[in-house]
Length: 424
Image 1: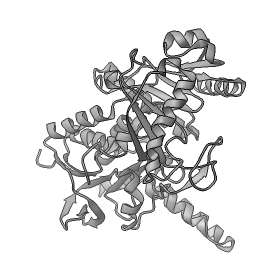
Image 2 (image 1 turned 60 degrees about the vertical axis):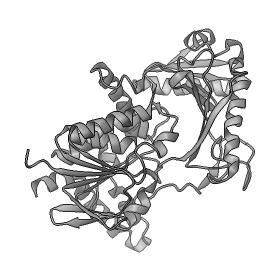
Image 3 (image 1 turned 30 degrees about the vertical axis):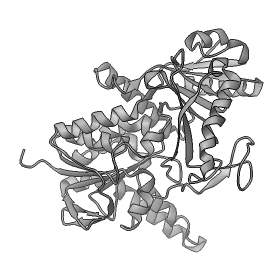
Image 4 (image 1 turned 90 degrees about the vertical axis):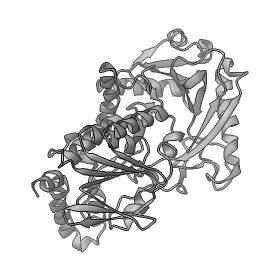
């Protein structure tokens, strides 16, 4: 095994650790670098719902549907019993408008082959006893969906890295990347340089800033960006109908007397089971009405719990244990980024808002592209080169013809990087 490729993975969230584990399983010499401790960033503040709902365009829906299917494939093979919980998801409507929207969503998903069905209020309560059938207008069930214990999945992935004689280095911040002959150089904040055959950048919210120094454009939605909410709500600054798009909040309850069986969604929040009988609460706008560094973020927990109590009487006596607020890694166009970069050919970048759903599937695809010689067709629409092409389209009208020609010529180069690099 003297010719084992050297792979450096930068970023110890669910994506980075799973990719590192997958590369180690393919006999690569893996070094995993994290600026803090693996699993301590965004992965620890995710609602951790594995699903493919409301994902557009079709290629992104298919990517997420395969991400969910990957968990089930692993489960059938006896992998992931400690971290993937295929409990299903029950969604409820509270009025005519939300019932109509729910029915339309079920019809759309079912038509595309996704497991989705309308169920009666009584059936919903049978599936999840927390639900009071007299308080809901309609319900649906998504049996293949589940939740992921991110901490356990990260722990297993780290074990895979160690089993492959890989190295895990915590508190090692990376500041840049450079081409280095046939390899790629990783520049650390302390002045150290690591040489690798391939480097995978899986740094989540830090992706844009880290890659910019190497001339690579992967624009992200910043945590200070705001947009109108779907419905009104109280706010502390700006319009009361605005929220911080990339900021999300969770509340963790004390153990419930009767633990949740399923994931449950209402029109404005979600609840899911967790370890030791606790519940995790999350909801649109609940964690994003104030800046993340504002002490008022700690009001998110009581706000989420009050939402739950209004619809679920069984939550009346439940208390909170913790509140967490994090920033979601969201590429500017909302879609996954996965592929080799052009200016640093040995550098592969991967970042997505759907990290939990896609972690295991992307790990397999990315390891295959990095260490193999064939591109994954499922990733064709998600290459980082699309952002460079978008910049070309922004030139003056007089130059539009040449810009389009340049964009068309560049796309095959990006798509062919895997094969080209292997031949070299």
